[in-house]
Image (cartoon, rainbow, N blue to C red; front, side, top):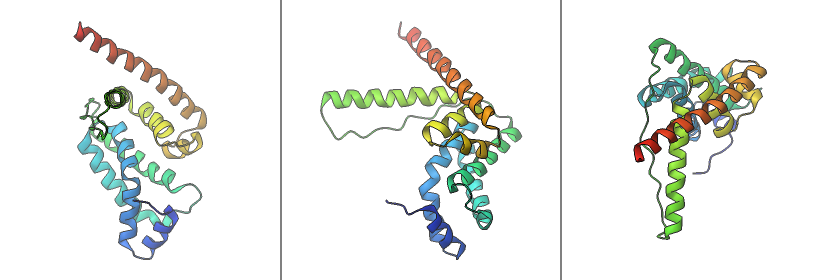
Amino acid sequence: MRFKEDHLYIQQTLRGNMNAYGQLIQKHEKYVFTLAMRILKNKEEAEEACQDAFMKAYHSLKTFEGKSKFTTWLYTIVYNEAVGRLRKSKNYTVQLDEVEEMESNSSDYLDGLKSLQLVERKDLIKRGLDAMKPAESAALTLFYLEEQSVKEIEEIMGLTSSHVKILLHRGRKSLLESLQKITNSELIHLL
């Protein structure tokens, strides 16, 4: 499905068109869930945080001034909701979700091998992010997966530019260490 610009959905929603807000949710739900999941590390908690964040965004939509991108405003709500839930639950356990299966239309062996390597690589990175501190994982997710700028991450996370850069630096370091631990432990199991 091809989506329209966010401001069109926002205008329609403010005029009472609930379908427009549904389209806005569909457009951003994957990224919102990814961010919540990086912080909460629990699928059910992340889903609930997303629902609550979308409800809060809906009720506050008339306060969105358009000074920043809508996604920056929305991710701020999601981030705050997820961090608030994390603080309440003190749930710092790491849970790994099942890997999404990739569909392969090609019967070519090399394409199948490449697909398998891609799935394994994605799984490895996801496991590495899941094992990290929530703030570092969220910063890396926003920067690399959601393609948010440092300035936008500042707004979302309520931090200074230097703090965001430190989180990104530490996060990259932590991700490398995490990936090394995962691959080393998997090699030991193979031997």
